[in-house]
Image 1 (cartoon, rainbow, N blue to C red):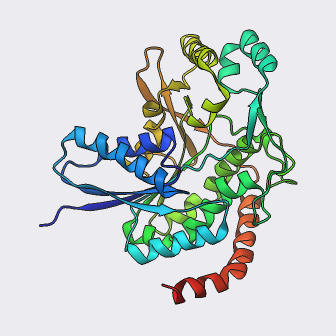
Image 2: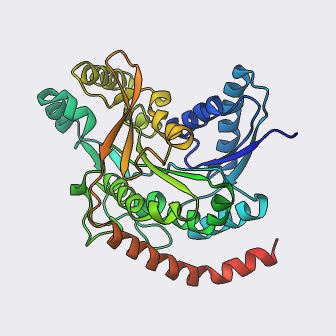
Length: 347
């Protein structure tokens, strides 16, 4: 009898969190399960680097089951690329067991160091877990004319999921949306759903992910798909390294450890610990007992021991956001209908 095969797609696989989701997923599967991880990236060289890292990690586990890899070149800021990704997935696979929506695009432009010092000195815990000193550009659009952060983190993944929904239904699969500890309702205005006027577009996009989950998990449940919402806490992220030097990097780590010591459960620091909630939701959470209208957070104690901490989610505006996204999807279906025809003709 052939061993069971599971297929997982992780968006943002080349991030610290994405790679650690892959590591933990490999660990959590039964030893003889064949696991195929679909690595996503905008460029092929980055795909090769990520696959090499995950292969090396998997090799250390000495599993009897095969861990193999596929890749998907997709740019969520380009709707033609998203459509092509959906077409490739539907062509290559008959099912998809896990979809980790881990896009975390920001338009960061630096750090307000004076503001950072004030926040961190007055309240280290709040300064570490709800920072207001990250500078983000305002009004950045994609070539498709949409808000860049909105399209990459919210609409692009939403559109892809809708296009590959039959694969998830066939597997009775799981969708895991990666939100943030900083997805406070204050960061989102319903007059600016594409986040073009916001100076906190990253946080606003994560609030939209909260609402999108709240608006859709029952819909997917009726179709045999289980969807969860998670947040990874605070951890070292590759995206901010370019704004740090030797001294500020270790200063950041000091603040993180101080905030953890002072009682914050959310300062995980390690990407591996941060990935705990994502893989818990994918593998261990039981929808018959564990609510889907909550957010599952990666948390840890002062000594770094990890656990899952639940958070309530304010769903105000969820249906309004879904209505907007559904209307936008129909608009892009119309815009891309010739692309669908062309991609099939050129296959």
